Image 1 (cartoon, rainbow, N blue to C red):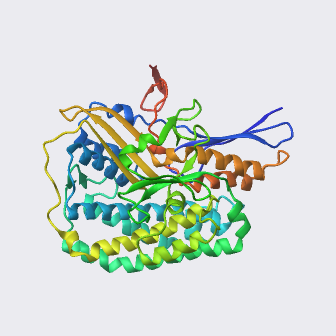
Image 2: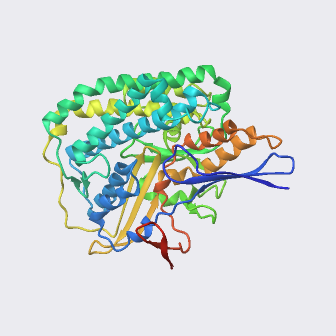
Length: 474
């Protein structure tokens, strides 16, 4: 008889998800799926809002990467207004964006992923977490906290809050950076860069001890998508789209972000609330591609800063064709990006222009649609708004970073489950490996924005002592 294994919830990720694994009569894996079990209706309930409200509304999609939605939405607003930002405004946006990536990557690696690497995937789950890391390896934990706090502090400087900031507005920024805050950032950034290099060495030491396992873990062929600058370097805030296959061949190159629908389509399945984007020329599901740190480094020709670019070349040297496919290498790529963004922060803040006051461009023109594309920590993020002349939104399409990886995450779950589950034998460590495959992608499931069908509403009315008096259902 077919046996069903359910992992619920998937732990150490942002949001709510579960995994179902079906075994055949021999006890081997037949199918495996990653289900996103929470629904977010942002595409629908943003209809009727005014486009200049969207940077604050859509930032509420997520408490981990609010800056990414905030900036993508503001960029869509720029397009609706038809404006070009001042140099200071663009640099301020880049600064808060780099800070977002630094703090998010630090959160994922140190808090969520590193316990699997430092303690081992079969370690006692009571210890295999951030609290265990603090107890047994406090100096490593402190470095993670320090890096993340640095990024969050910059977000707070520019947006008044570390979560859901009020920084970017269509046409520019709402606040300038004061000279004393610039000095504060400069006083800390070199230490953060050194800690980013320490984190890279942590992963490289782990890989040196587990070379074959790291290379083979959830290793499968796919395409990769990301933004690049005019020189082909990794680009996080602006740039053109490049799509490469697993052999390094460009399937699409220097595609204007506003033409994203020429290469991407989306599919809906009835067993998850997260949509399945795919490369339309290869169809579904053959058009699977990956985004995020691994995707960006696989499509790029270099990094824009010296230390990160040196590590980037080491990364590319892992495979003959320069395309690194094993899912655990997401962590290596993520840490290279963390270093890259810390160096970018230093470069941006060393320029006195960052404290300029010319931070907003006024416009009374309204185009009927606007598209904002940015590289969120987890991958390429698309905000597309259709508006009326009054500025009221008629329609919204969001392709979130985690959604772009949906096909790949399901494939990773299947590959790991198939490799480790044999003859029906299960251990906690085996099931954790399935979760590790998901954690490689650092999914942000709260960013799932698709609503399917009619969601039931249930309200329980309780007495002061907690007893339920009445249940109302729609």
